[in-house]
Length: 295
Image 1 (cartoon, helix red, strand yellow):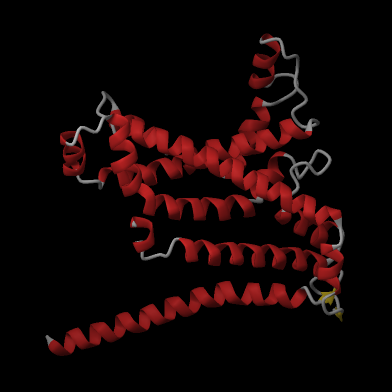
Image 2 (cartoon, rainbow, N blue to C red):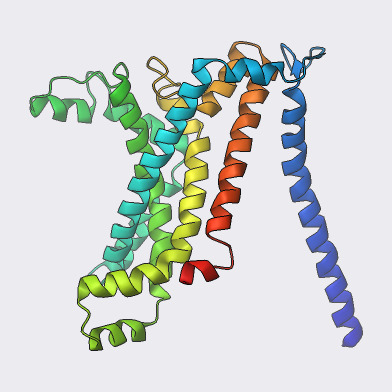
């Protein structure tokens, strides 16, 4: 038995080391290659590169287009994050209550998150169609006329945020619901004995117990929304007037539409550096151990 246990432990150790190695290989190699490309001037991935040093970074950082795309990305990330977390928490609290058909509702709540992004984009394009779209018809009946969803910068940005919130709020809901169910009922009973009402129990029991999960959700959803490419590209392609063009789309335009591989790699590398800095600061404020959160 001892030999089997030793052999099994060695096998698990080797399997773990191989999996970590493969993961690092798949992550580090593309990142390092993108950083390398950012120091060259290339028209395609197969063309001969010319070393330009930091010229790509200086060129990108000196253009208003980069800073506008950066601001759009921050706006999309923050607004989507606030709505996803707020609605996700509200839905999780609702689904944690006892009511008829709760199991079925919980199953239906995750459906938007399971849909492919292209399906979500096509559904919203149909809903926002200028002639037959359901949202367009409703807006007209309410006296707002027929909104030009894809031509108005504010409406286009709002459309991207609404589609993002509808698709990824279920992830926040299910995660917080699982955390709610892990809270000991004795804590609520003790708070009730101490005279705490519903709001008191929510602020002094529920929120502190959910805070470690909320910290992780805010970090993950913030990163994902700042980097989200598919839903924005499928809905608006960064338009109109670059109102929804954030850094991922800007990097795509540089690399594949303007044939500036180095510029696109520089934009992607700057985005990576910004997110890495945010993650570092975030973990300094909220360590993974969670001790500072609890206090």
